[in-house]
Image: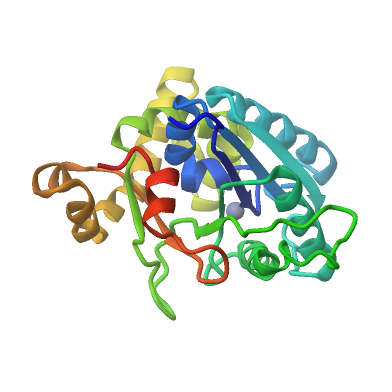
Length: 274
Ligand SMILES: [Zn+2]
């Protein structure tokens, strides 16, 4: 491991997006002593069927902190309104300043092809910020970076206009339980709002252990198909034997609008790959 810890910045739209989409990679980074910061651009205050926005925002902030604490990461919940994000100049500027001041080696965010307008807005704002972080006269109060970080897109399953490219595939099978423990901290989401949305609120068990098992089943059923979808990439990365055995993977597409993932960057940022 190099002397300076790597710095991973995950810019998601909602307080549970970072864990949901990249909790495995975040766990691997923390296991190696690297620095992980998970930002929610929105306050999460639209995500409930029974709670009002004021109490909900406070709950979601506390839940984000608890989830980050599972792996020793930091969480930050910004104040932009949930369900109403736009890729404004103000948001772009905030992201430029965030990337400059945090100094990430790797930034993860949503693609602009996504079902959720908030995800698209954050993806667009990060895409727009990616080059501008090196331009000193943009947001001049925070010194510009000399080099872009590598920016990559979080996994999703959308196929139009094109599916996410499996530029980097990570075996997260052994981290699934940790990701589930992080997600379980977002109680008002995974045990209340999301089951309510899906019409299965009555199926959520009451006991803590049973709930965790239920959540594991729900989350793993969503992410399991990804390993088949990216089996070719998994085999190319991990070899015939392990590549075929991997059950859970996180997949990242490298943005063309920031630093390229050349061989040196791949070895540095994804040092744990064979
Ligand atoms: Zn989200």
